[in-house]
Image 1 (cartoon, helix red, strand yellow):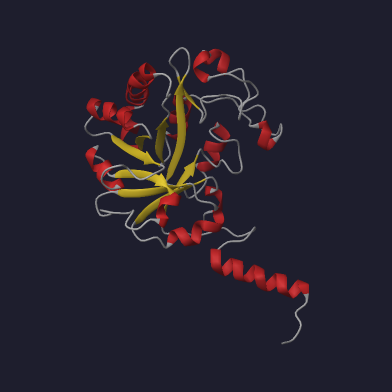
Image 2 (tube, rainbow, N blue to C red):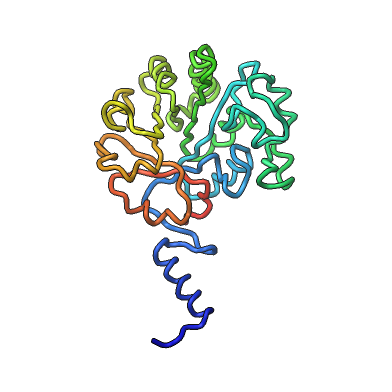
Length: 274
């Protein structure tokens, strides 16, 4: 066998990776699945910020996801963690601050991005709804529950629902309320038989399939961890329920595109989809 120089070997390896994954560092990927911009374009911009959402609107994603909590004065604010310390320049819990104070903090995620996005603030759900009003994107609003506060969990569903339907009623058909806490979704369903909801699963439910849990809520959406794809028959009743997985990285785009019955996937890198 002839010797192959290191440079040639690397070029061959790169070509293999491109053919396997459909992308490289300078190439966007294509997919037949629906794409969710997870917390906006959160691989490139600070997650759950207006700049991240604005960039998501410039991508091929048909869906955009964000996370919400309530401030001390019951305003719906957009952030993944209940604790502010990971992505902002302060500490403490969201629910201990009124919105006016939350707006003084930076949401630029300096631990990941340095001070490049320091001027980014914590958005409200209303700000995001205004941003997408004239777009075609569908918004997935993940409602975060608080394990230590059942009264909070009792009321957050209605507050979030009212924020959408009373302020932007025309957007109701382009919004889905999703949550790991099925009880929150049940309360929203009790308020409105037509609004779209979607349960989220990190593990298989104790009874029935993922699709069965969605159908119990009278919805056609279920979201689940990509790790569950390794299990047999995890996608059932795909003709009745749209199955989405989270969170897919660019090297996984090509493989995920081959998953039969999968409707779509969430990714932090929607800007890498053609």
